[in-house]
Length: 320
Length: 221
Image (cartoon, rainbow over all chains, first blue to last red; front, side, top):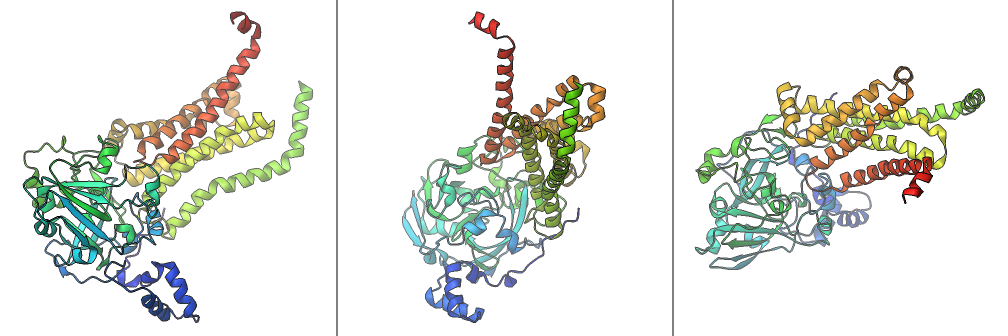
């Protein structure tokens, strides 16, 4: 069988994003610009809705990071069409369509728990906490596929330092927005909504743990967890929680969505580990999206040099 | 008996035209999922993870066709349309065809014919074990699907052998159920259909037994 590899489309070629992001805007725009002049449509939609940093597909200015990889980046098309985002759909191709009109503006993130400074951030103020960086990370899904994604964000530690957690803070708990009106997937009890995730304090402080606002140099597409998400590259993808509205500093291991759903399959740590299989499938190999042959999965997804020391002395078979 | 044979033959002749036509339709319908996959594969339309898409799609069609095959007999009993039975064999063989494609995708694109890995997988992973069993159970049925086989085995023995299809379908649905990560809607639906199809046979068998010896049943209360 002949299988063509997906073409490598640079993000710059996926032009009419701001148009397809909102069909109503597009239709209004197109009607006004009856001749079909697309440029006119752009202008109209920009006039009718003031653009802010929270809008999807806005360019973000970021600096290069030392955490980088020269591995081939997964095409934008695949990163934005092949999504596990159960709040929208359990079908991987569902979120791209269903997330189209997801409202990310206004957006607030409430930071609380064991901190000196409880604070609610508007997205804009959150984004200005530190310098945004371009970071190209591998992403390994627990299902056995992987991507290389150029994220835009800054280390989560910047936020931690701002809110000053007290000595009681041992873990960080993240919560995704709960809004069945916008998240059709939340109308069914597939998971115990809202989705929650957690990290140990040292994991949350780790420079690789990225508070993420964008990918491919632009704000996050809705289906990729807009407007703000966490990316923890040495853990399976589901640990990198999307569309965050709440961050709490807590004293004990917080409940996490997949662990609650199937505790024997998804542990709290969920570090990428080729030696510890999922009860139902092997984690030794993975299929990099766009590649035909399978790759060997790397310990800690290849970030062992940076993160392995955090787990010294821990039985990773027990704490999977 | 000769008269009955004769009448069957006559109706056969009368119906031959549109049954042959229906068979063509059936072939086209049954081959179209494979054709669509082939087209998508050559036109970069299988999405981000084409091999996973092929595996899933061929797996789904194996199960759909197995369920459709199992629906033929109940449908025939209910409607009294005896000619429906003529579609059972091709439907079953198409289920096997998709089962082979599905297995092949796994052996080739997932394991790259690494025999050691395959054996380990079958041994270690219940969903693979049960899936492989489902295919193996279909194999003797496909091999003995010819009229010659029925003759050689004798109708009774052939029929007994072909009851393996029930085990294969059950194994197939369990295979699907066990591999799904969380959203069980589809395997649940398939399981429900299978329960109805197998339940129909059980009820029918029970009714037949009661009819055979009604006195005994009444006496025993």
